[in-house]
Image (cartoon, rainbow, N blue to C red):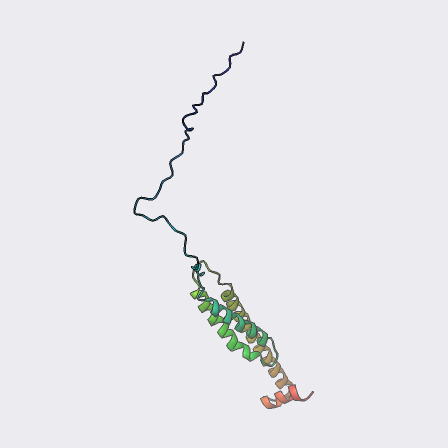
Amino acid sequence: MEQQPPQPSFDQTSPPQFDQQPISQPPFNQQPMSPPPFNQQPPMPQENPGKVLGIVGLVMGILGVLLACSLIFFFLGLPLAIGALGCGIMGKNRTPAGMSSGMAIAAIVLGIVSFVVVIVMLTLWLLVFATTGAELGTTNMGEIFHYLFLTY
């Protein structure tokens, strides 16, 4: 015959014992931690001081590239390119570590692109004026301008 294991006996008079620590209460004269007041505002996120300069530089860079690509107003792209570079560099330097400086970087890139396009357009216009002057046999800029823009 098989022997059965002994059955545990439960004492009905004492509660069961568990391996838990008793709940601790704050010491006497000490207030328990209370939740924050109802109308308290949550903390504001940290502001990026270089964000405004990055946006201004980005706008100047976009306008600089657009004007630099125009045939007549390309020279207006140069001050916008310089402004975009300046604002982009200052915005990148003022951005704290760990925060995004994407707009400032974009402003720097667009400022450089705008500057390069202005130099290319200036070179092309000088070549056009030089070849037209050579073709006409004159160095008078008024005659060259008249021939290029007012003859046709």
